[in-house]
Length: 119
Figure 1 (cartoon, rainbow, N blue to C red):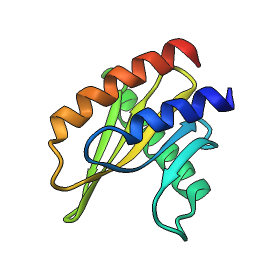
Figure 2 (figure 1 turned 30 degrees about the vertical axis):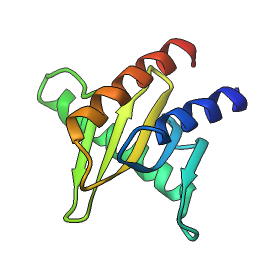
Figure 3 (figure 1 turned 180 degrees about the horizontal axis):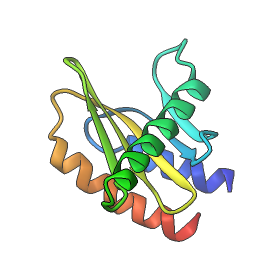
Figure 4 (figure 1 turned 120 degrees about the vertical axis):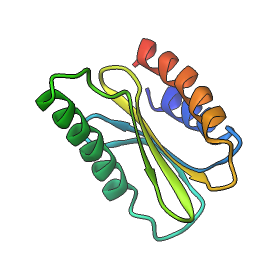
């Protein structure tokens, strides 16, 4: 499982515009990760990412709409994208502001579908 998770992380980080990423369980546990910067608390980042997606799901449920497959957080200097990857995993990425967001999202959707089929 670890080898497969690392293979997916390598594929995610190869998407143009992705500067950091993690493959995370729905419970917020890091399965594999890539961060260029030292000092990033990947366990905290993973837990918060899972919490953000779970909160979005709760908000959707309260409105009786389908659960989201993705949450996008935009900041002045970067974008954080959290995406479901099947029932048991999620992809979380930090995207450079200069990247073409729709293209990044589409590539990540393709990867997420494959992860969901395997994990």
